[in-house]
Amino acid sequence: MENNKSRHGRRYDWEFKQSAIALVQEGRTITEVGRDLGVSTCSVSRWVQAATQRAATRPQGRAPADELRHLRQENEYLRRQRDILKKALGILSAGMPGDVSR
Image (tube, rainbow, N blue to C red):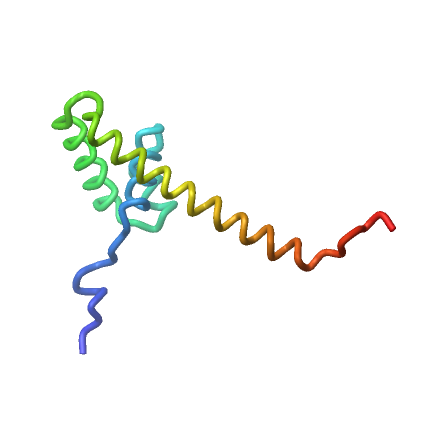
């Protein structure tokens, strides 16, 4: 039975691709980024090319509805992060003695 990964290659999530694209846009070469991330230079090159094409076809600035949607998503993400940190603080605080000055 043939391994599915060998036939279709590895799948990378959007955030991983965005990180690789950002490294190239910051001045690193595609070869360096591919080597450091363990990705083929062909894949990194395709990601950068696709991002460049999307940027060229996108109108300058975001539409108000897109901006609002993006801000709402970011707000929800930050709320979830805050809640996680609150829970972690509660867990860590519960294991500490009440008054350490005595």
